[in-house]
Length: 78
Image 1 (cartoon, rainbow, N blue to C red):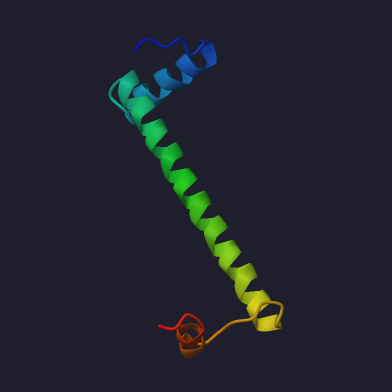
Image 2 (image 1 turned 30 degrees about the vertical axis):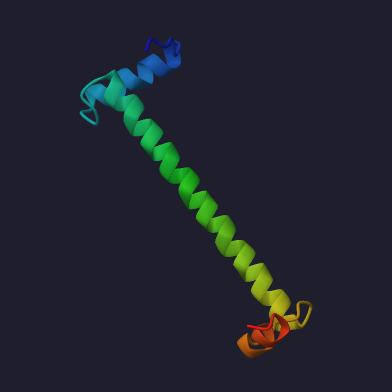
């Protein structure tokens, strides 16, 4: 794959290689993509945790009705 990133990015890649963080351009790009994927996973986890917090607050405040396991079994004839 051939990609033209432009001067600023090429300079950044060169600096990363010169400092020894990566051995070549492909390695820099792979590391950047891996870091980006990790960031997205962390963001998704944070959003899930926030949603759980909101849901738990609604349950605690009485805005959302919760049911016991026995109530659910009875309701669905399980």
